[in-house]
Length: 319
Image 1 (cartoon, rainbow, N blue to C red):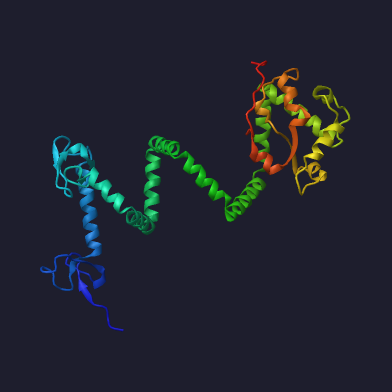
Image 2: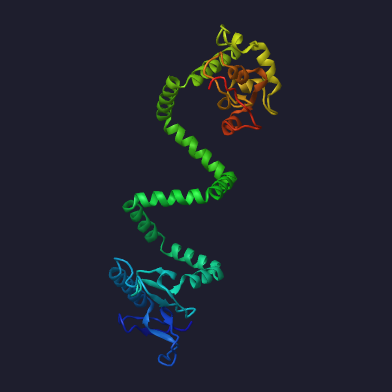
């Protein structure tokens, strides 16, 4: 294999392979392989130093704030408001007008995206550190920009997250992570649930009624409580409730799965859709009527939340 062609940089004086010198577009002044006399490192350092000098010079805003400027692409003379700001130029304005910049970006969108992605990959650590420092120095601006972006792209963001979470590998990864987190934070979860339960129980009458009903129903269904006072409130017996729930058992499940906690008692019209604060309210009867109860797998019931399958009009008696 032939030895690599070497060349000496006229800036740093180091001898390097010729492929570390950029291609020159002035072949008449530089006929030696049409290569630049300075190596790529020196050219890059010189450009960075120039940009830093211009940024320091234009730190207080553009030098040219009023008047007109000629676009270097279309050649038209336009008002300075038609040019983007740039701290790396002597005038403080980008040499090309906004229309030319947007036209170039539209025509070369894929190339620009690939180039930016490659630049990020080549300088990932530096870019991550720079953005981290900026976020710490500008927390309010960062939060406002993030909020504005989310509000403008909410549907796309939610759709992308839903598609990402639906991937089998991601679902398995999240499940394993949650299992580890729960195992490592059981005391923390218990304290949080305890605090939330007592705070809600203290101020929310409907929550207190529902929790009492649920506990009594579950205790009766599992044979842990002899008293069945709730039966007089809802108008049906525990045996009738058992018959109703057994009819709604999903395919692949059994009554033992319900007793083991794999199935939940679900309200077809969610509790949140009803309006009641005591057992005397009309919506209490509607909420707990036997035809509004069914069994659902625990995961399905939790993901369902308070969504309605069809429109529902709550009672106005409690308002």
